[in-house]
Image (cartoon, rainbow, N blue to C red; front, side):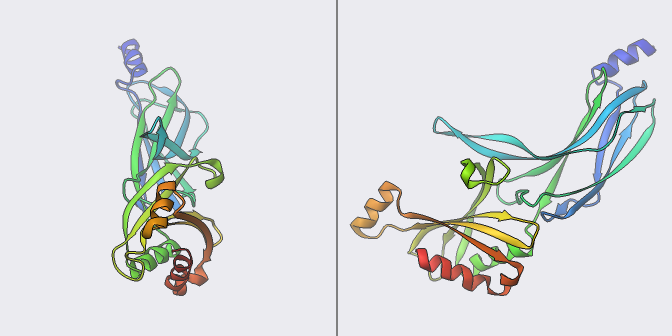
Length: 256
């Protein structure tokens, strides 16, 4: 029977299982994630070479005028050195890690999840998947609130691949696309896109793309040639939170 148990375990039947339990499921970028990886031995002793956590998301890549979704690993964490998990043995392995500041927010189609894996010598590697809800920190929230107060509505949020010069350490950025539905910029702009480049120092680098609405013949030519868009970067900090609406209004006014 032992021989058959080993054969079955090698293809995942009766093998060790893994279950990751998070302290909570909602985090802000930069916050410490805490949890436990619970491992339960199977019907045979198995050598676990490694336990790892991958923080994952998806982004859109364009090729041949077609966009498709690609998985990306935001960060990886190795939890243990090799050990033996015995028959029906239970092990709880606690972990902590800081959620990277450039983790996408769980807005629109953007999803973030932790995948937990065990590398087992001579066997099928069990895995587990747990979704996180990533919410904006106070500085990011102040930008969203300011845009709302200025009459903009968030239309879309997506992670998209961009050229190296426009991104940080990851091959994509998360774009937030706003449209003016009321307020001073309705009728003056088609849309406005914002990309966050956060850091751990209480500052936020914003890249803002202002898409002006075509007005008159010159405006129509500009729109056709794609020169009706302006990209501008602005640094804001926690000290700017009370004045965020005024700062964004001044920036948008300058380029609209």
